[in-house]
Length: 639
Image 1 (cartoon, rainbow, N blue to C red):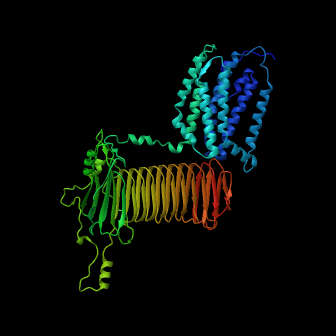
Image 2 (tube, rainbow, N blue to C red):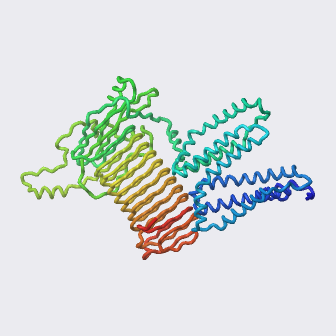
Image 3 (spheres, rainbow, N blue to C red):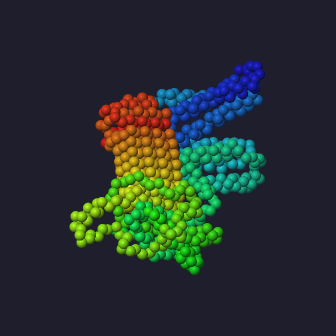
């Protein structure tokens, strides 16, 4: 077939840019044009179908398919221009392979349009998509190797890129099959790229005597390997990415170097501090080390202290241990305990580790009152600022390093000869209940509080370290930058703020507020209202008696309760939402999804993107917003 008049380069580029393949059809290369047009339709259709099925579950495959879209446009424009230069007087010969490929693309497009839940074919497609990333990357690696063998030049980086892409695909397939996270090892093994590139150079230098191929860098293959591995790591390891390394650059001025529990160990003499009837607040500060707080049967405060100095020179360690102590001061109704020590080490900034165990008198059960406002700004991480806010030990109202207790400091009532036992009991009943409040702060180290009566409230904060509180009679506030926060058996409200780590709250009689930047939230048996918010992590709530507000940007939400005692607002941007509710209750459900499916065994009205309905009288409202799948089942139903 003879070709017609000369084709316009401008029109060729315009058509190729508007739709991949159109430029080739204009220049007469019909097979390439049809393959490009079918390829981009198949790529875009697969993205839409995967996102509609379960966007979060297939997110990595969607990302890779999305990266292929600009590749189609680049090939379309570039190769369409090349086709003008390679045009001959006759049309290029057609191949049987090209016709078969176009037919296969059409069949696949039809299947994508016909797939609808809950057909067996849709289920097969959904499962196949889970395992598709690894084999697809393997085929791409094979293509790079074949491209190198057929090339007239030696492309440096082709074999390295193929090996790297194949390794990424193999790790992703392994993780999918075994439900593991081996792909995370890429963060340590990526420098092997340079080892492989060096190996290619060595191979080329040894073989160049037998071949006349010139050496060129395979820029396209190398960039493809970096992009594929990089996006694979970003998507699969997203939960660990919120940049903890930034923390080490915060407040560099005056940063401390923390000693560890090794080296020389010292057990200090027990410190005893009187606790008067007017005492209503205890504050504890420690720069480096554990703080353990508990109740005892004594009527005074006792402090057990151990010191660790991790240096080789014992004489120097002895000096540091002698200077390490707990300073106790009282000012009005407040007792302050503060760990003091001298610095050592090459830079003179290292602090010994001081572990403190504080035992306070056990108080009678009283009603919980509001938490008193602390007079220390815990938002500041500057130890100097904290020390400046501590009462001066030299003041007239202070007693420093008190080591003895007199009998007059007890709170018991001794009957006089004129009083009967009944009058003594009445006098006890008339005594005002002590509303003790507790504040504990550590710069580096865990905080552990168990079996404590603090009706005035407990406030805990740690820059780096675990916070554990259980058996607390009183409301509690817990704040940490890095670590885990665990609250159990709390009589009162609980407020939790965490930057990096996991939160666990169980058996709380009051309201619970939990907020995390990077971490999972788990709550069990909460009697009051719940407000849970995390930017990156899963939320798991089991048995919520009051209202619930749960929101996460990246992570699933699982909420199961045998009762609905308030409104529920559940929102997940990236992740599945699974609700287990009572079969018989009084609530109204309204939910919507952007991608994914909605499943339920309750008598609710389900459309493609929404679910709504009323159970019982519809007293409470259950609002569910998700970009991905929603599953609502009643308790006891088969999953």
